[in-house]
Picture: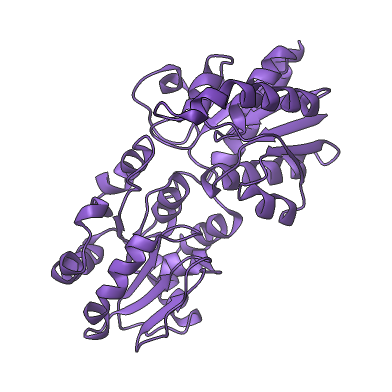
Length: 360
């Protein structure tokens, strides 16, 4: 069979798709797996590196405000639809994860009468998946959605990366010992709290500036800091227990080693800190449709995190609240949450069900 996966742009769309593709390849090794993406998305690095085929279609952006881009959107959508239709010809199933590439893929699959499965990672769905949900009944969600057709979808959770899932399984017998071992393996002092700071693969210039201005808060205390600034940002010199990096290579062990995480609240980040984290300060991205603020609510409701608006996150606020945040981490559950551990299996089962039902 030929299975097409649509989801690109950010890790929030790509990582779940890759987890599903890997499991499908394990259970259906003779099938062809083809990803659809755009030339500007992160998929151009992640998907070929994972050993999967990637084909590109035009990027369709529907502006939220009236602009020149809105005038050209129908033409771009038509081109993307025709390209997606070309790649989908002969396919047995399309599974979409949202993002710029998904909407034309959904329309193309419907025109070819190809079964469509949709997975929505965010608590507040994007436009592409809201559109796609009107074209199929095979719907999966990572977290509760309040309204629309996706509110009645199968709750699967969000597929975890292999290293996060394995760390979750390995840590389950003794979480306290697992967290100590993670610190030791990263060369950290097991007797001093660890604060890990990251704002996505590209980082955030504005938030990195706040951290730079708050350096006294970190260097005048017993805190150990791991700060991933993003691959496109300059890396400052290390300062005492402050450890700056472009990118955190061993994310699973870093989650385990951290008493406090300071991060955005994208769907993948929320899922991973839910699985392995202790306590998290979420700073939602102030643009978009507000999904990041909603994504974090599940972790916050477990008393394992809190939210702050970006314009409130200042060096003064951090200096005033860092001790309180670390105290909250000490009373938070030491164990991670395994709720997403079977997500990939559930999505693969939904795909298999769609294939069976649509071919009868």
